[in-house]
Image (cartoon, rainbow, N blue to C red; front, side, top):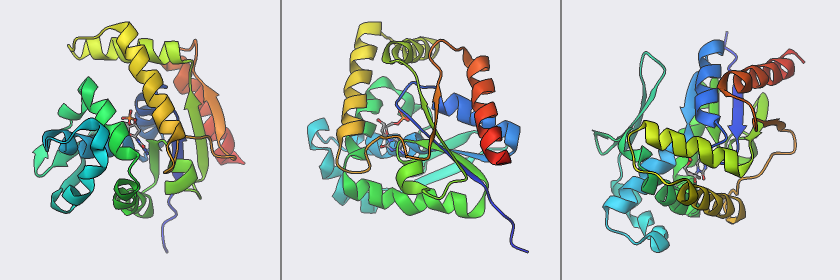
Length: 227
Ligand code: DC
């Protein structure tokens, strides 16, 4: 008998805690966690390394043919990204790669290039996939859809602390400004903009710590799956 696979889509703006919470939820449920932002970041890193200008990110399209992208999940459930054979899992977390990821993700041909790659995971596994358009475009039939968000100042504060923890230079004002710009670009672009799917459950983590956010998310998801 064919095994039933479940899918949970988690969308929302950057810094809402999607990846940390989705990873922990996947561990609890025994699902595969797919971080689609990491895939866009890898394409963004490729564009940056190719010497393109940020405002001409669409020039990455002819380079997609020579881009070899691999996604591997380790025993620990962590997702590793490989760009032409190189493990770039750390490199894609540099602050400036965020803007590149956002810029290439607005290019329709880039989104089309990555669509089947993302859908394939859900065909062969029970998944928790996070991103911007998972509930609206990638997995519109997902069993559970969540729109995870928090106030911009709080998201910026989390991002700032995360950068410091990684040993990177950071300035809160710059992080907030970059985050607001990215929110704006991700939600106003023509191709698959960030928006809450009509049937997505809203989870707002403003004022909640990680543990409280996870409890709220777990409650929301289990409530929906029990229906
Ligand atoms: O989640 P993140 O911050 O790592 O994502 C990086 C960028 O990639 C983000 O600015 C928007 C884009 N992205 C997207 O357009 N669609 C997705 N499904 C995931 C990310």
